[in-house]
Image (cartoon, rainbow, N blue to C red; front, side, top):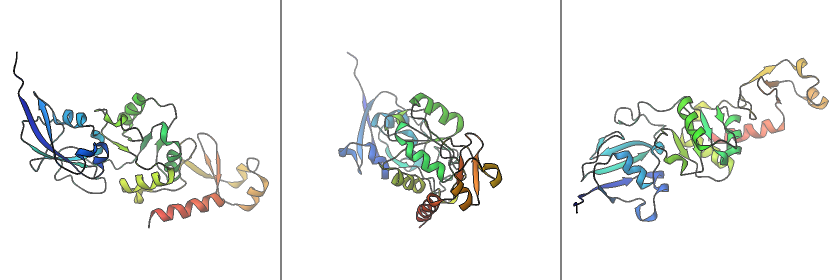
Length: 250
């Protein structure tokens, strides 16, 4: 019978990466036992942490990429995405942060999709998107995957993804904006919340028959989505949303 030679490495996951760990491994170092040749990404996936949530890995205090081959005896520190910090001088994991911020959301986050569009972000969402479609479009269009499904993020093909912790849509929006440091990128009411395409200001005379008479008389600025033809105007809902957006910047 062939003898199996086991090796071990010590892992420590930081900050919100602990959300993916069992209680016994949260906020502490632990030994990872394995046999045979093993890549770092294979070890991390087997532990249960999505690669897309990681932005920096230090092995014995030196930055490495996911193809690093474990040798045994290493001390490995794994950190979450640092979208608001410049770590380009020390990380070997990503070529650059994802700053042209676009999203694709899974079926659990329909209301969040509308909020993200409301503040100006290109956000793809359909309640029947298959996981494979979400992953493929994320890769092809350089979109961040937002999901409430931890299993979705375990695909090694995903490089930009985030597990949304909050349950309700407004706290979810605040969480995403703060997580990816998006305050400077907010463009409120520049995109159709129904279909995601940009909206354009139009002459009031062009929508005379498309809005209620009282609305036409009361408001002066109107906007139209060139894709789905939905008409928008700055009513009471607009002011409530403005107040909410201002609160995000505090």
